[in-house]
Length: 155
Image 1 (cartoon, rainbow, N blue to C red):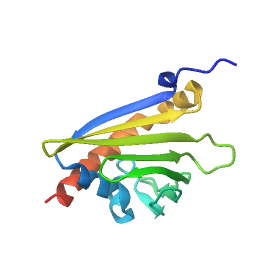
Image 2: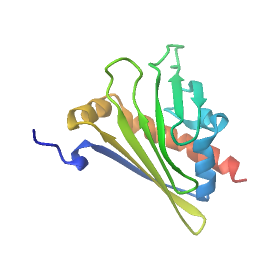
Image 3: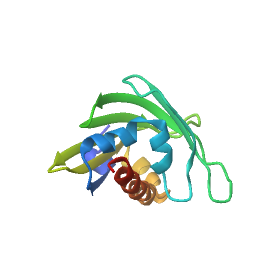
C-alpha cells in the first residue's frame, strides 16, 4: 500500500499575534479562556472539559446560532511545552470518526508571536472532507476571536 505524502494530508494555518507567546499559550490552556475563542463566530463552545496535561483528555461541544447542538469532539494532549508547543489529537466522538493530530507552535520575536497550526489527517480524502466542512474558515474565525481575547489578557 502506497502511503500519501504527509503534506497532502495536512492543513497548515499561520497567524501572527501582537502578544507574547505566554499569552497565547495561556489562552489555549485554561477552559475559561478557550470558551471565549475556540470555534467559529456564532458557534460557541457550550461544553469545555479539559485535563490539560500530557495524557489528559479534553471534550468540547459547540452550539449553533439557532440553538442546534454540534457533534461533540475531543482528544488527548500528547505534548505540552509551555509557551512553545502544543500537540493533541482531535476528532468527532461518534464511533468510527477519523482522528487527526494538531501541532501548534508559538514562536515569539520582539513581543509578537507567530502561531503555526499543522493539522495532519489520516488521508488526503479525510483532509478534504474537513475542508468541505469549513475547517479552515472555522479555525480562522476562532483565531480572530483568539486575537481579541489575547489583547485583553495582555492588557
